[in-house]
Length: 275
Image 1 (cartoon, helix red, strand yellow):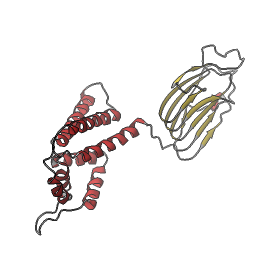
Image 2 (image 1 turned 180 degrees about the vertical axis):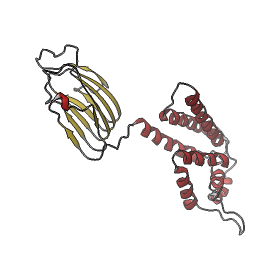
Image 3 (image 1 turned 90 degrees about the vertical axis):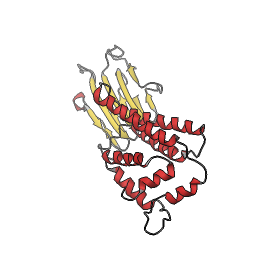
């Protein structure tokens, strides 16, 4: 209500200004971005040519010129209302049931409602104002892609990294990568006196990840991955499994892995191979 941004958006899109205000409040509570977006729109949106003494509302002049195109469709407003209802229901489910809805669930539900609104707008009369729904759908799609390609772990630093442990005791339980290529070379770890499987986990954000293991080692790999190719011992269709060694050692392919490797990667190619 400070600069008339919600009113201008309402006149331009046909969506009730109350819903725009609720959206700005929700963005503000979700991290403060609502204040920034409101100020940017206040500064960048064209104001109407209101007579002196009357309040100038952003985009109102544009909306008035569009009004001659015909009556507005109720679809955008109903879509926004449906979106708020779906988000509210998911919040209640998360709050009062054992089902924990993730960010992907919220974004996917919102995107589904917007998609249904666009379908409805295509078959209804009147000025549909589909531009706003399309823009909202694009934003939700980008947010869903970002949420689906996690984890976005940047706390591991920036730059390429290579780790080469030489004993089982040197193998870390966790290797945390940030941005850049990461190589974990386990091929020099002797396995003859290993009494139990060597367990390690690699969490990597952005960049290619390569893990090397000895030829004779039996390996069990678990992979959670976002964007990029996964190649596990020349198997590009697997997200994990048991991979027996190829050497002549007594323990090779005995069903008891020498390495238990868990990979959690965000963006980039993942390759596990033998040295």
